[in-house]
Image (cartoon, rainbow, N blue to C red; front, side):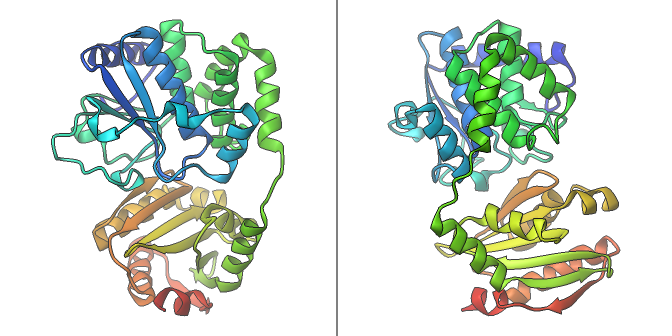
Length: 356
């Protein structure tokens, strides 16, 4: 079953998952590349849940391509040793659990359809992994994957230690943007966690609120802004496109905060093109479509890549170095199919930069 409809269904899925885990002595828990606080928190929490209920099972956490800037701050603030959670080799695990992962592109090195036995626990709007999974807990009406794990703990009466409670609250606060995107499940999960450790909420909020921006990030953001091209959608919405080599999320956040309704950031790595998409709440409310995940899924089909994510934030990896002209043609077709005309206001330096 791919949809989480209530606590009774969650209870059934949780016990079904434990039965599957019981027959697999070695479990690898994998979250997405450039892991954020929700990806780390839900992965570490699931490891704790598994090893609490099945003492003989060894569970490991894998973080492909490391963690993002905010996650580093959380890890440092809680003095977590993430390396101690890692597996000697993720390919040798008996079972893999993809946590907070919506597509295979987010976990490099893993090919689906090759006999891989895996489970999915996720909350993204769309998820391309669910069809071949042994079991899926795919709850797109939930605001964070950390909420799912917290509610699973409540079902099983598993009580995490204080540092883990703080970590899970950090994951929830991060993905809900300090509760601005909270869902009913958010408060149910927080109720369970704060009953275990009331001061953990304040600690999590304090860690996430601390500001510490590196010089390299500032330079990346300024470069991204200086290269950006500006486009109109039906003379109503603004689309900004740029190319960057790092800190894509910070660059797009700056573009959205500056007034763009849709922001795209392109990055070239090892012969592939990564496209990151952000959409403002204004354009999401007006168009009534999960724009970011919808657009990345469209680009994945068009160019043969793999992608997905949330309605307001998503990404796609294309296994080739696409040119600016190809991307613009695809974007025009995408928006035209949705009744939107794309016009150029200022081409920007990103076109020359990405084609160099």
